[in-house]
Amino acid sequence: VVASYATVWRAQPISFRDLRDIGLPRELLPVRDDGDLLGALVGALRALPSAPEAPCAAGSIFAVVGEGEGAWDAAVQLARSLDLDERAVVYVTEGNAPAKVAPARRITALDQLSTRVDRWRKRSTPTIAVVDAPMNVKAARWNRQALAALGAEAVWLVVPATRKTDDVARWASRLGRTDGLVVTDVDASSDPASVLQLGLPVAWLDGRPATPGAWAGLIVDRLVETR
Image (tube, rainbow, N blue to C red; front, side, top):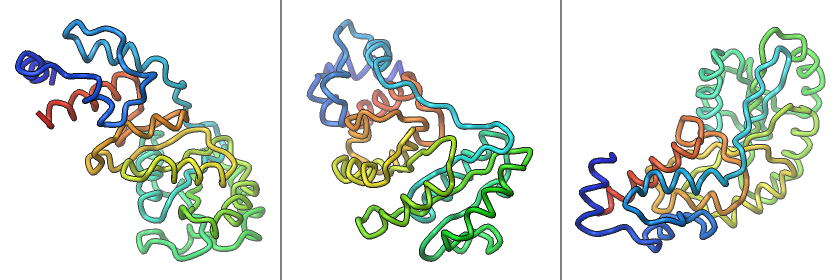
């Protein structure tokens, strides 16, 4: 990647406008221009809010909030990163669950949660509770109640990079609590860094921890691809 970027840089230097076009907020633009864009980006991106850590203590509850199958897949990936299998993942929904979710792991009524939470608190491992939360106003009240009943140690929202940041901001506000974001579908977005405009900590980026280096690598890759 670095060699490819160097070739592109010599042919046509990257401008701040190029960085803004892929969504990088103005306050995160590099302050130096010495030909080492990757290093400059890593330095600038250290100003990002610290990425939270997933709760991993016995009996803890980790809420992963998002829409349908995408939220489930993200939660399963997070479970694997914690050395857990799918049995640690449950699905809380007011509607229908994806077919891949076993019936025994579906919770479809709020009054079922208190008993389940008591059981999960006695486990020797964490429980990852996927809360199916469509980005619409009608679902907000039920989702807030579900999150309150869970009493989770952490609440992470699964955000496709293709969604408008204003829509995501309103959705997060309606839910009432966000400790971190899980950004998915990066390859499908023309401005994958725009999620940083929300000012919320990004915990995971396209299946890996969202470190400044991961963000910088993604941005440089995207710039190289578009040249």
